[in-house]
Image (cartoon, rainbow, N blue to C red; front, side, top):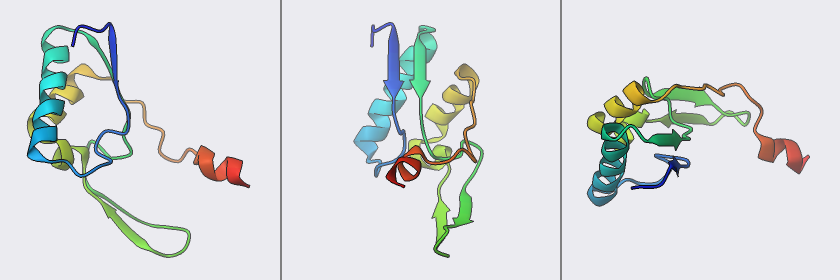
Length: 98
């Protein structure tokens, strides 16, 4: 909790249990209350659920970040973080696999 910078990478990419939600909320709340740096990456939209079709034609539906980590943690993140949207940027793994 006392680190200068904490990075939560790929937040919401795994199934969130109540225990995990509590831990994530407690980390975010602590960083928020103490004005400490927090960097969060996620492929979930903070504004709402997203639906799209893959190149292969498969329909995909993703929950919003708020649905996955909870309203309390999402609210704090939206207040304390500056959003950098990288939607539309080519997947570097796919690019390097070619």
